[in-house]
Length: 540
Image 1: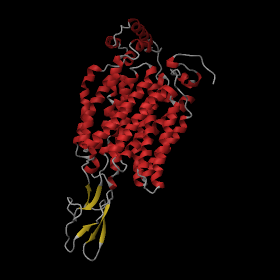
Image 2: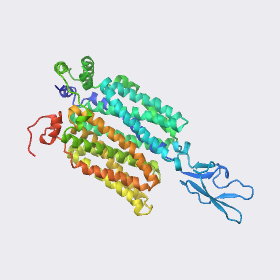
Image 3: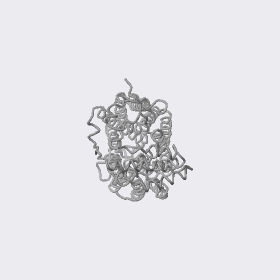
Image 4: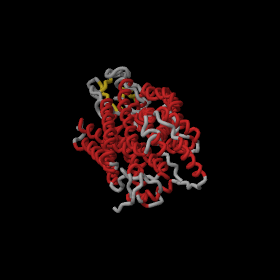
């Protein structure tokens, strides 16, 4: 027997002022989530550097070098940044020269230009050690994967609010410790822990938002929530530009979450979780608080009916659903396998392009800021598009835009022999725009494809594949570092192009009754009904 909460939510406002205020408070949780997901685009980025021989020169000077026993040694007049070797030649008539490689000599040192400080400049993560910066990002997203597996279960068992508070405040302490570490390995270990808790915060926040509203408002609520993601990307560019020191940046994205201490009293547990766990008394207190704030009467009759439903449900044997149920029946199996790939591909593309854009030539702060503005435009567009055209067509459109733009952005430097300039940036930003649009739609679309009985399992599994994409994306960028810079961008595009083709095999879910059972999901094309109302099956 299903507990019908929609009638109660309807009587509490649809939505009311209280729900909107709580939504805005929960949306602020996306600030620490997004900051931590993308901060490595700045604190992992090496400033301009050059190689020098510490036995030849004083590191405080750019050109003049110390004298050897027989002749003066001078550096090549043209300094080349980003090289792992440098050329020295004699100032006498012999005109002898030598090429000195920093990686292969104990005297090899790197000189960094500018006032920017990152983990790369602090721990010399350049040349043969450049992969360690990407590895730190990968390990963080492995932590994110673990957090998705752990906190989904804990939120179901102990409540959304408790887990939300734990995952909101624990990263403050971890973030401060991260800003103080003196070792790369300690940094990576703390970032791994940070990833675990940050994913717990993202998961519980999204669930609390979805459980706050009636089904017909959840799509819009999810799309608006993603707008906070876009705002945070823009803020990240501003914070990095103003501070330009990785430790200060780390503190700036961590400490402000401590200001949310009032959430302990302001943000309530979700009514859905309280009802499922038979906590009627606590639910009644929250309902009274909501009705008072919204100037509504207390729905006593509805509360009594829900209590009867809960008592009847407790006396019924219930079936435990498992991951296997996602793949047990043919239609659900097809939808699940496609969704797993879609989630993987959008995270590979979005995070890959996020980190790639920060590394493009030119003013990377401005480029990142523009890409954040473009993300926000995509998120705002989605709010209109999913209401006007449904889910499937906009999803397909954004996938095509993202994939084609990435392939073009990657092909330009190859076709023009590196003389790409502004064109590469423009197409890279458009590619990220497409991925942002997909990101905003995929949450709602997936939740509407899965039936109620396995929706949490399905969304949790999709999130796992998404985080796997976050793990893989930095390593694809490493592949580009060792081959050609454009290879990684083209790979992002090809992965997303395949995803766009797979979207064609999924049904539209807009204005259709959400499936409740596995049988409903197997016949999702055979019935319609807006806002969850039943209608007669139709022939297709």
